[in-house]
Amino acid sequence: MFYLLDIIGTMAFAMSGALTAMNKKLDPFGVFIIAFVTAVGGGTLRDIMIGRTPVGWMLDLNYVYLITAGFFLAVIFRKKLDRLRTSLFLFDTIGLGVFTLIGLEKGINIGLDPVICIALGTMTACFGGVIRDILCNDIPVIFRREIYATICIIGGVLFFGLRELNLNQDVLYLITSLVMIVLRLMAVKFKWYLPALEKK
Amino acid sequence: MFYLLDIIGTMAFAMSGALTAMNKKLDPFGVFIIAFVTAVGGGTLRDIMIGRTPVGWMLDLNYVYLITAGFFLAVIFRKKLDRLRTSLFLFDTIGLGVFTLIGLEKGINIGLDPVICIALGTMTACFGGVIRDILCNDIPVIFRREIYATICIIGGVLFFGLRELNLNQDVLYLITSLVMIVLRLMAVKFKWYLPALEKK
Amino acid sequence: MFYLLDIIGTMAFAMSGALTAMNKKLDPFGVFIIAFVTAVGGGTLRDIMIGRTPVGWMLDLNYVYLITAGFFLAVIFRKKLDRLRTSLFLFDTIGLGVFTLIGLEKGINIGLDPVICIALGTMTACFGGVIRDILCNDIPVIFRREIYATICIIGGVLFFGLRELNLNQDVLYLITSLVMIVLRLMAVKFKWYLPALEKK
Image 1 (cartoon, rainbow over the protein chains, first blue to last red):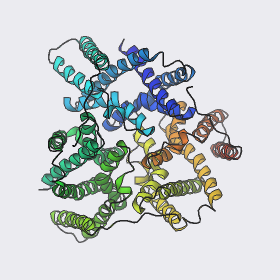
Image 2: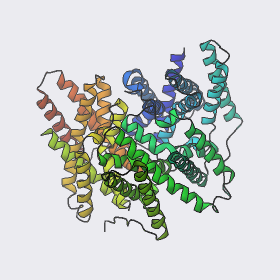
Image 3: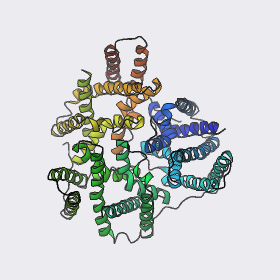
Image 4: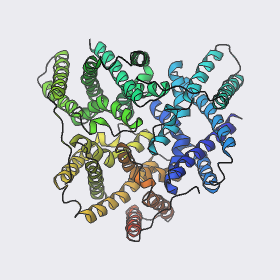
């Protein structure tokens, strides 16, 4: 079940990267690379920083195949993707929840402090998109408008809070990811956003 | 004493990052991340390249707390920071000296050549700011105007020169960092800068 | 022989980086750093991702000397480089072939899947230029116009295909790099390019 959600999230992130790249009129190689880094960039950065090398996607070819599939789907249906925006957004939100949990777990596995684990979860879920935006020469969108990283942080705090209750791990994962998914849906529906910090 | 200077430098770098991000009208999460990477980005890059993982700030929560404090100070006093510019510049200059020494030391510890150690010192002091500028979609300021990295290189060369004299380590650190700090103050006071390399 | 080609490729990449940086009117330090990352950035990224640290150039000072030489050559002859464009392009193309092979080899050495090895070869040859363009605040040129990465991928596939034939390693390296070099020369001569993926 968790693995299925990882698949959905990876493909959704790859497709979101491909879309951004096509909007920038990149060539197919550029679109593929942007799809790739959007999907695995956050996890790669996390793996590098904690010394888990070769990084994850090099040891599990399924990520390469999933991203390639996501790339082709995005390219083939590029003229119809606007109509599928709602589905894509839902998949992307699933990715947000799942990737945060994966990052948290990697940090716990090597005994890092909860604060650092939450940073790793947020990095896993958010920094693929940050690298995508840098490669496309934009200021990262999650630094400007969207409540996105904040939800990862809330999810991480909730995770460690619930963990004290000795819940079954599956229940813990389910509750945390559902709360994150619902929060994101509400954030978009009710247009919650963080105000810019103006100096004047 | 050295540790105290590290604290001052880390907070100064975090505040300089927060200021740059607020000038770009980022949201609070974006401002925090830019503050974070400005403060620890150079050291993180260095740790990754020499294989010292998990990277430094993941093993010492004090950095997270210091950066968080620097972030809040910068946000709260954001309308008054222009008047504090001189103090901030002084702290930033202390950071420049201390971070260079920390980078040199890490390289020496694992037996790298002095040339590479100087590169690591410069990276530690300068690349937080480089990553800050990239995330804010600017060409890094140290590539364009400021004599900044040049001072790190001079400090590194001086360090290895003095080291031949078998000075006490504290004296060695003190002299090197003082020379760097004085050079930077003079560079700004007398408007020293490197000319652009024009092609025509 | 192979080592000689590595030298030519490294210097050519450093000079191409220095040229890009001078076109952006950077100061000498900025030009040097851009020359440096263009030459070793791809290999550094590869080494970090596969956990081969300290990264390559830190253990072999020859890279530092070669890049420094390339930097000075580019600076001294900066007004005449336009007339040398053809030679530079040829050297750069040699670098493309050699660096791809080096990347492939590193992946094979640690037993990674051929697909991942091809990714490592492409990364080694192409990502120095990607980092150069990001530091210069451009969308990477290989994502937009040039058939460049595609040639690395073709070279990688050819390499693993020929490898099945149990060719002598030198012959294998020679054929693969020659095919890549000829393909690039033809791509530029006949103006082959990948079309942008337009959404409308």
